[in-house]
Image 1: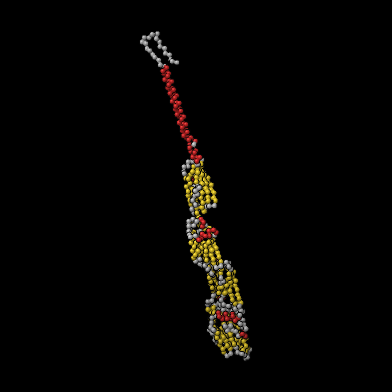
Image 2: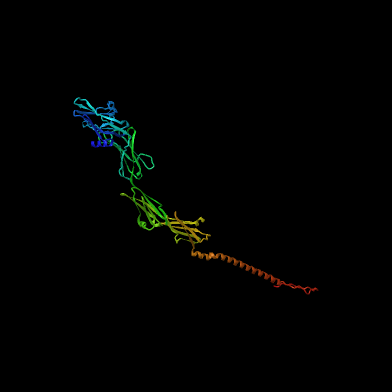
Length: 509
């Protein structure tokens, strides 16, 4: 395991191949060229050494200085026996603590630009000459710290709508320094960065060896269609305000079928529905009709068009029978989703032939029968001229029956208008007013003859009175004439009066 980790660390550090340099019997193997590392991460100086047969290594010192003559104690960055400030901070560690293994490789954590420079190795131990001996190797290791270019690694499993998933963000490097801070943010289309809601985040550190660690963070959430195309950013913050980040785009496998179009259509017009399925990847879309109307889609007046991510259904010259539930089925991978549209064909028939009006005893009764969908209402324009009337309306399924009754004294019209309408269509009909047979007989019976009888009676009475008056007048004139005749007398005048001739006037009896 250690060999694998060491190999990984060596591979992650950009440098030249290893080169062995010897002086007398002391040899050291270092990178042939300089070692390039990134700020915030760590650098590994690969190193191995050998000593003479009469030298036993006891501890190791690493110096950082630019002098090629001699480094002093203030330049020590690591000592296996000393706890100086630099070593105590934990930034520098041996990859192999057992010095007898002659592995002098070190790891430097939490790199900054100030860590750039030359590093020297000194091995302390016992020799045949003295017990406190040491050897400083003249070849040096050069480290150059640059601005960070590595990014966090974000692992995204296949995302399916409605299925909980976990994203993993791993900080670069296998460093054992300060624990970095890992945060998650996301940004939808046209939005600003924000923290992901309804999620669970967890930080994790794996101790691979005594000197190597892997830092990661997990983000657990339930993906949905709205997450498709969302940009998720994992940000890793190291010490000394060094920050790196990686942004990925989520591809969520989802389906979101939507039916568009007017589901209320007038009879005779065209039904035009489009089923659009927003999915990744694209879905296979089909149309069907629920129930007995299923064969309607095979009629010659039906057009179906399948486009990228949508399917359009067009039925020309629809009738009431085209009303029903239309089904859009979307097949997406191993998942099937259906959406429904309730289609209503609005219509209204003409006023039925058995509608009409009848007059009886000066009372007009009109019946108007019509049907339609939605159920129509019936109006009587005649009623605006009347204040006293009654209207009775009954409804059954799609049929409405309206009966109006009113007195028609002085009414002379021979037709009455009936208006049947719903919110889409209107039908009008002039109903013929029929007079009852008995009503016609009454027009020629006593009630009809009475005025003439009265006139005749008055005329007769006047004539009788005139006749009587004439008779009376005639009789009175006759009597006067008789009296005049009866009273006629003769007067004789005597020139010579004599008592013997006295005229005696005597009326006739």
